[in-house]
Image 1 (cartoon, rainbow, N blue to C red):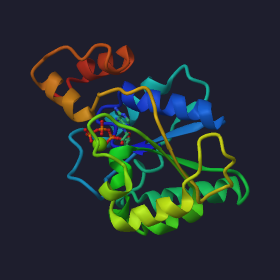
Image 2: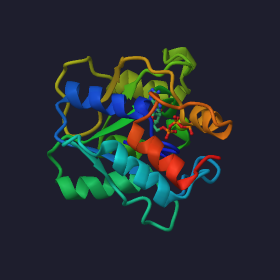
Image 3: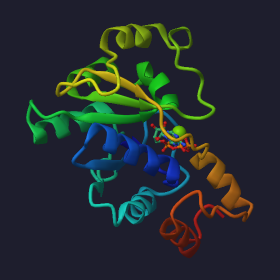
Length: 207
Ligand code: ATP
Ligand code: MG
């Protein structure tokens, strides 16, 4: 699961937990983007975003904070990260890319996006406020991939190439909204873990 995680919040964590449970994942790697190619520089330095993820995943034995994109100076392309993970796992084991619906709809703008299907399966979680995911609302090229690759919930997937769209407990939480709340010194409690919030206050982030 990639993201800017600026900051990490319960939307991310719950998505990962529900998908890990339904797909029976052994591990979920949270991989903060170093220098995301798709958007302006994150508000917060990569080391802080990584540290917040570390605190957020502490205590969940299958969640791991993974620093590989933060440690890379160049822009972080998901296709490169998945290539590295696939090399570590070998060709047989299923690898899943976890995405929210808004990120999925933007997939055709990603670097070498079609190659992603050779490397991993993709599970897409509904996200409140994200445009509908029906075929008409999707970029045409993405709709074609979905038509070919979509599998039903509970169906077996191979190592790569499947797309599963799945509901999750709807949580209308975004890092953008959190940055706004924190900037006006509002309460962000119960939208993200206390351990992350304590770090934000201790480091005076987002003020
Ligand atoms: P920002 O508002 O800064 O874009 P964000 O809350 O969207 O932050 P990201 O780091 O951009 O968080 O998202 C990482 C991944 O998590 C993306 O795939 C995104 O779709 C997904 N995601 C984030 N929040 C939610 C949520 N509340 N429900 C479902 N998916 C989510
Ligand atoms: Mg986002």
